[in-house]
Image (tube, rainbow, N blue to C red; front, side, top):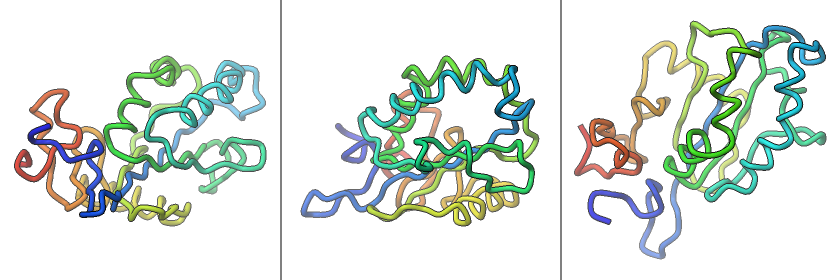
Length: 185
């Protein structure tokens, strides 16, 4: 496809092997503790939504405990902040999961279970293929995004960057995902 990187945005070397993968981390502050009845609708969907991610094209890895999710991981002092992190083959694959799968329904209803956050709550960044980011790394990326806004080191779906650090022109509509430097700002 003209104007798109192979594999939906991940750079490919001459042996057709992916060089980069996209990491994402997001946080959300619950309106009540996880075991409160108001959170039941969220908790009931968790296993299903995680299985949708696990089976989605382009999914590589997600942070989880032995219980199979990340709800017990406390990356922040605030006990009501949930932390989620995953790695995907491409920005396009992650975007498809977030906005075009069964994940969309709980995303649309997030106000039922989570408070509106003033600070950056989602960060994306490119990692070397095979790298699994740490919680500390993700927290640094969230802080970087909060301090500097979107950059090649920490960005959002709204203001994405290519694996080589070029801004991606989102005015291209649906084709913005995975655009190469010839289509960048």
